[in-house]
Image (cartoon, rainbow, N blue to C red; front, side, top):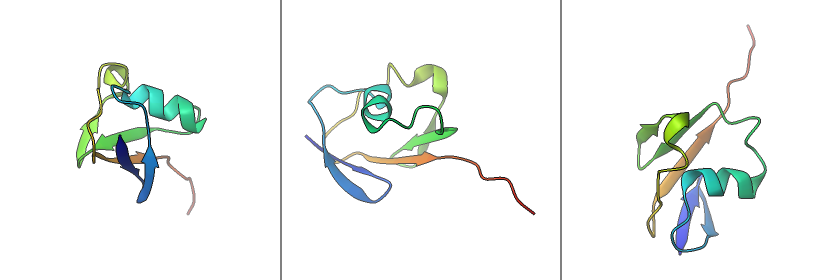
Length: 66
């Protein structure tokens, strides 16, 4: 199935969770917040958040600065 991650189209396995995608991308150490279709998904729900075809995923990390 196709999902859009931070604006980029990616193909993932049917039934993948948000956690699966974060693991696949290798960014689990950097992701501080995640949203699916503009709705924040709390980190303790990532493994339960099953994705659907054409979902839009935003993975955010926070950068310090002044």
